[in-house]
Structures are given as C-alpha cells and as structure tokens.
Amino acid sequence: MSAHSLRYRPEGSTQKHNCSSLRLFVPMGVSLSVWLYSRADDSPPSSSSAFPPLAVSISSRLAVTLNSSPVAPGDSRSRWSSTHCSPSFLLSACKQEVTRSPVELSTDGVRAEMGVKSGLHVWEVLWSPNKRGSHAVIGISRQSCPLRAPGYDVLIGRDPQSWGWELKTNHLWHAGQSLDLYPGKRKRKRFHPEAVEDFRTMSSTSSHKKMAQTLLPIPERVLLVLDADAGTLGFVVDGSFLGEAFKDLPRGVELFPAVSSVRGGARIRLRYLNGATRDPPALMALCGLSIRQYLGQKRQNEMDKLPLPPRLQHYLLSNQ
Image (cartoon, rainbow, N blue to C red; front, side, top):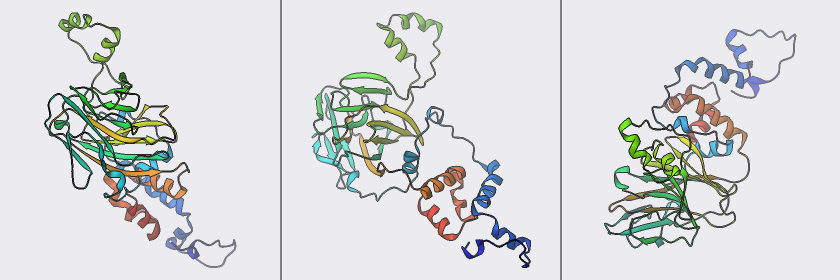
C-alpha cells in the first residue's frame, strides 16, 4: 500500500469511490487488527508440555530477543573452549560439541570460548536426556571455575565462581550448596499410605519438602538466558521462560556458559542464538513480535496473507 493511496482527502470531494477503493483509506493498523481478530478462533490448541503453566512473564527486550532470527551457526560465541576444558572431554572440529570420554570416578566440565560482560544473551544447549547420567549440570561460570574433580558430583555450582542447574534433580547450585528447586512453582506428589512411615524417617524437614516435589524431566533443548546488565540467569524450556534461577550475579566481569558431566559418551552442543544491548527494542520489532505471537507457530505460513505491503511482509518473514 503506497503513501499516495493513503493520503488525506478533504470533505466535500466530488470524486466517487466504490467499496474496493474505500478500503484503501482504512488505516493499515485497523485492517491488520480486523484480519487477526477474524482468525482468532483458528488458534492452535495449547501445548501438552508441562512447562507453559510454569512460565513467567518476560520483558519486551527478552521477548524480541527470543523471537528474532538467530545469528549464523558458525558464530565464535558458539564454541566450547579448548583451553578451559577437562581432558576427559573431546572437542569436535567446529568446537561446538564436546563428548565426554568414559572415565571413571571423575566429574568433568567445560566452558565456552567467549564470555560476556554486558548485555542480554541467549545460548542453546543440546544434551540428550539419555546421555546425561547423574549430576548433569548447565549454567555459567567465571574464568577461574575448576573444571575437573574426583568422584561423581556437581561441578558447575560447586564453588563461588559458578552457578548451575542440575537437570536430573532440578536443583540449583552455587558455592557448593543446593539452593532450591527450579522452576519453583510445583505440584506436590501424592504418597501411598505405606510410604508415609518411610517418608517420616528422613533426616530433615528440608529433605521432606524436596522429596515431596514433582521432578520435571528436562528435554534435550534448553536455552540459557544471561542478563549481564541485570545480573540474572534463567532458562527457557519448551518455549517457556521459567523465571530467574539466579540473581545478583557479579557485574562487569566475564561470565561463560558452562556444563559439567559424569556420563561417558555424553555429547553436549552449544550455539549462541542472539543478544541485545541495554537499549529498548525498536517499535517495528515490537509490532512484528505481536503479530507473530498472535499467529502462533502453526500459522507462520500465513504471513503472506496479512493486509500489509510486501516490504513489511518480507520483514516479518525474514525475522521468524
């Protein structure tokens, strides 16, 4: 739709218009709103995943970042470090994947080659649940975090220089302490009467609370969300941001995505997806986000049907 077709026409104009030409004078935003509203009943059913009910609201800055096109797969921020890596990990040629050797009585870690000191950043971590074993942890670390320890234990989150989420138990770890379950909003398990007596024999009240929570199986794909400006770390699972796992992270120091594992054959892949500065998102990006969210994932192919000029349609399609 050109600017010429939308120009103001004074009252009393003697020029006649048919119904099709009158549509040209309807503001673009109204046309788009009507088009979207008329298709509201076509929305796909909600996901059967357990994570959407646990999602928390997110800032427009994070929403735009999560819904923007990812950077090129070969970005240098997608590489594991060959220097800051346990010798039990084998690095792929592209440095985007590490594989743990079958070493006994050892806990091994690796961190990314590049860290960040400012901005909002999102990485993708791919780690098959069948290749995790016990003490599979993802999180962030400072440069001085130890990356190998004897025995089988949590490594990322074991010292004050790292913060980790243990995927099997859903526990958060920092400075060698289990801080809480993540995400925090859970339903309690129902226990059979015969199990009550055994449950009462547990040593502490905190153990009761943790054992009574439903553990969530974490799928292969997890997004790590680090806001170095705000000093927070959170995670996205099945498209749902689960909230801030850690707050008050050190600011102005370099922080790196990191993982630790005890499972032989564990393969862990890293990819940097996107980032943002402190600046608020552009209005065009916010408008595009609203349209894509309204359409939903299953109707993204309807972008070309939107009552918008081709240039705006192209913008929406190129930023999926």
